[in-house]
Image (cartoon, rainbow, N blue to C red; front, top):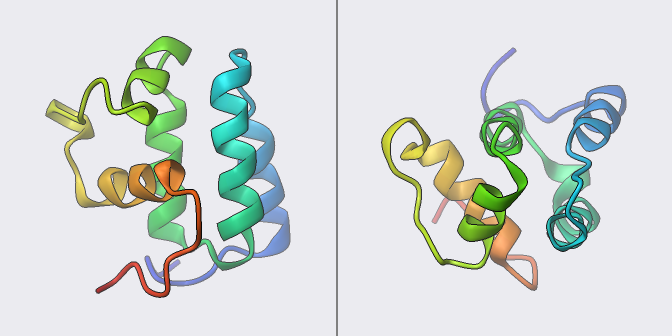
Length: 97
């Protein structure tokens, strides 16, 4: 699968299910993310989201609230892009710009 290829509905639904969180604050960010960007998610963004969802709830919340920024293995363009999307309150015209 190519990085910029859009996810199909099944892949998107599976990613959404896997992104459920135990902390309601994180769930709010994730639900808003899927409402805003779900239909246009590509493989690269799904990889970035999966990386973030592998974090503990508290570590993820620290990133979402800008208490911390990605470092080490998290400091990748995919993670930064998805983190910006998760933090965003409104859709952006183009994330590639």
